[in-house]
Image (tube, rainbow, N blue to C red; front, side):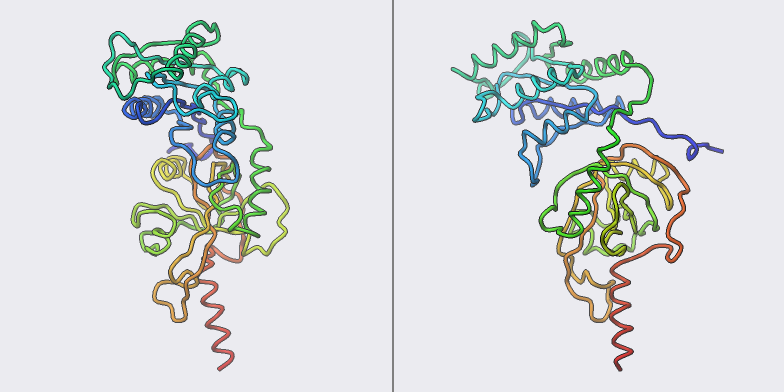
Length: 349
């Protein structure tokens, strides 16, 4: 019988990926494939949506939380920051050096690789790119490799990342500062009071699952409102956020959580269930749900905006079997609201 629940699962290495986008799309997919094979979590693969901080600050935040910085440089310098007149890729690279992160750089082989004319910079941008590449090649702090195809890049990334993990040792990486989830809890406290103001922000939270999973009967309206696919979504009832004093009603503090793709796989792989305390990166979500104030087909159900958490990435399990609220097995706020409405209506009759 497995001892899975008595052991803390290993925490995957977090690798921040930096490169230009349009000209490097196929190469970025190769990097993603290599990192998945190495059981690493890629950060920075997609640029960031609506948030209360600037994209560059968001990148720096993600970079600080990563164990490895990886950049892939082709034939374009990339978008330039107005203030510094440097590309975002170069700024991320310089920030990684400032933070002392292990740096794995992959430069395209200009003599062997095939590329389109439109993917080659000219003039001042080309001069900046050449200077940037020279800085990378001449730095003693950087592990630099070259690639001439998608397959050679994938192989080089996989080999280099595994080598860096081995160099750092087989120890579990637990560099996430403890205060991160506390900061997240304080942000969550603001979110539940003013969800419209803080929606779409991502943060680290430590949570306890007090309810049960919703099954395949999960209402389509809930999935669709939050951008999930019915039948391929995990729905956690009653998630309690840990880390700060609760200064609102319990039924407001308790929220539900949705997960899909790798985040849902992480929940399954780590046997997350009622009573499990775990940390993850969550998106604070607030969307209009059709007939949100009631279950499907309920009399009197009305459209309503609902606050939920979306698990973006699981980080680590803290404990299993933590005692939960005894008054309810799984709170469904939607159901509670409609039942309360109907009971009050019956009393009035």
